[in-house]
Length: 387
Image (cartoon, rainbow, N blue to C red; front, side, top):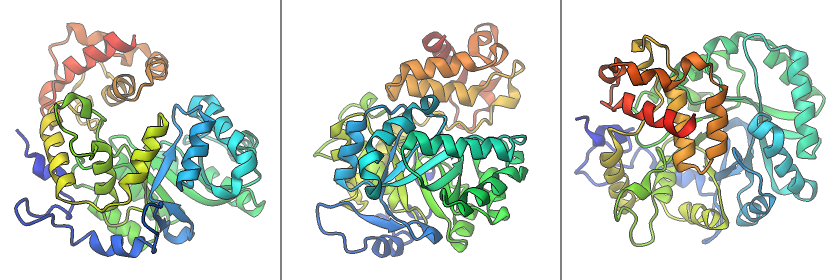
């Protein structure tokens, strides 16, 4: 069994028995708190962009409730993460209904899709469509969204399109997002390009500490860092009595993320008005012993079931099943209340990469998983739920 203490480590958890070990995170925490009054949102400067962003930012994947955005803005959340791809533009439209009257209260961070062959014209068209849906004439940050292949970064069309859109006054800064198994490779290559202002990527207390080099170089280049999927699967309801004395797993996870050097904002999914209250309260306290203990207990409970989407097991599959993607879709179905979207994503996979073939397979993936997950069982469950 792997040690969940090691899974939690990223310098801030140096010794299990030596207090909380947050010395590495303390300088950023004090620098970032910018004298925000008690009970109000806290803000950090998003790297070299100079933008003052809320420590928790609103994610809009699966989002269609403009009223929630109004409430989020009222709470002090000012960074709105969206994308042209989300619900085929419906998320941007929901944001736009609010931006029509509250644009000054928000920092808009949207994304375009770019492959290694996408043209500059296509990307400029995407920006114009996003501006229309968002009901604004300016997007603060545009990102190359959900990059899964390092080759995408060699497509100069995205840089040319950004510069043209920036010169026209349509966009301010360029970002990139990634959360696949080759995330670290992609982000390190993005650093070599020295053209990006903002990184957005999956990062949580159960990830392996493989991102040290990336964080250090990103800080040198003053890259703004926004993390997401901080809750490591959102499976807190499966663990009896995990959340006690008013502390939720989501709050503990957000506080852990914000205690990490280099992190400026944590993107969170909001499903109701109570979620906004919970996440706002998350930034009002620093990471402490109660949060530490809660996350360690969570990590121990789900260590062998939580898929990190690292794709390590995929080369061992003779059928080329899309393990990481399928397990992510299953997570959306089971824990994110996005059943229809998860089923749509699964249906869009090539039939030969779906998990139906796992029924007659002995499970070559079992030995390949570095976390000893029952990979085949998870895939069979996913196929049952999503097909």
